[in-house]
Length: 140
Image (cartoon, rainbow, N blue to C red):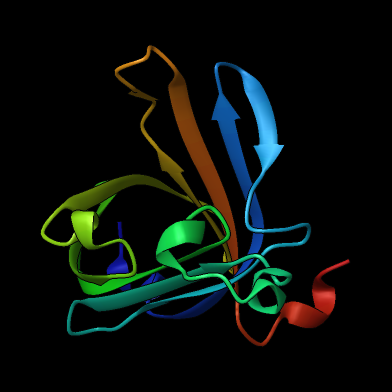
């Protein structure tokens, strides 16, 4: 896959989490967020429920309403890896987020996590859809 198509800034237009086959919207309805990929392999992501800022709560306490991270990125086939160097959740620093990348169109991408099973047996999957900045007028 050509990494040039990914370079730039993208706005979050959909954030859906599936838990044991039950779908829920995350980071608000509509959600708010931005992800950026640079040509020199750097990336950053910010996901936020637009109502979160009014709560006055700490980001660490509200990771389901505000989450930010940055680091390096690498694309191999349709798998994109985010190597986390900075994060609003300190336990994630030094980890790698692996996502399946799907180009829905030239200006929309979908990032999907692999299904993850918790110790309690819950199965989670997250699907994020991003639209290239400059095309936000198309959002309904």
